[in-house]
Amino acid sequence: MPPSSKILLAAALLSACATVGAAAPTSKAGSTGLAGFSPVSGPVIQNGRYTAAPEAIVAFVAALPTRDVLLPKQLRHRLMTAQVYLRSVPGTGDRTEYLLADKNGARYSLWVRSFEGRRRGSAGYLVQMRMPCASVATVQTESTEDLAAARRACARPQAEFADSGLRAYLVTAGKAPVDVTASLRAPELSLGRERLDRYRALGANPIALDDSRAAVAPTLRWVVEADPERPLPAKDTRGFQGGMKAHAGFVIWNGDRFEVRDSLPRKLWPCPPRDEGCPDPQDRYVLGK
Image (cartoon, rainbow, N blue to C red):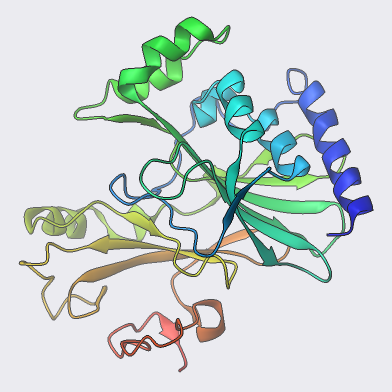
């Protein structure tokens, strides 16, 4: 992204920050995030570096309502003004997209994937934030904001984190971010309650986000990982990788908005270099070699 474009986008987002109380992102209070990263692995950004966060992303993160992302503004500011783990990704035209986390892997608190829109001044963002439930009380004493949403998240059975889940936003220059999370089909609906109950009985993990192609394609994937000693039945039509995983859908950026798809062409889920197991003949949801 040319310096002039970065300045314009950052300025627009900073303006949104200033008016967030009057023009907050359009979302229902306490709306639920989508299935996000496994708490065991977290996001994995390959070939990044620790550096300062881009100004536009700092401004975007500051503009988000605490009720949805759960981390108070002071904590987000502290995370985003420190060194972050960042990877640049080629975007639309001469513009740059980014993968960003405060820490790479399971110790993360904040993750962002930015997407440039076909129209200049437009962008999309996928976001996930979390903090340990053990820290919520301490963070509350340092914050002027009410962290009731974080406390509710931690009141769930066996909760270890106040976790926003995956959230999606659209940004147009000069306007506040628009929360479009609720417009995306939840992956639980693709699998169905009965199937998920069967997976749980087999010891499979909950639905989680696969970000293994996030640096090379505008795509993330929801999967269920099976217990290695109890693979999913061969007849399960959602299973692949020898029953070690089940497919729950893709979320993609199409240049204008986010979409959830059940299948897509190989170019949107490319094989990693030197991966002898790709393409997987059992993976009927990625079309083409």
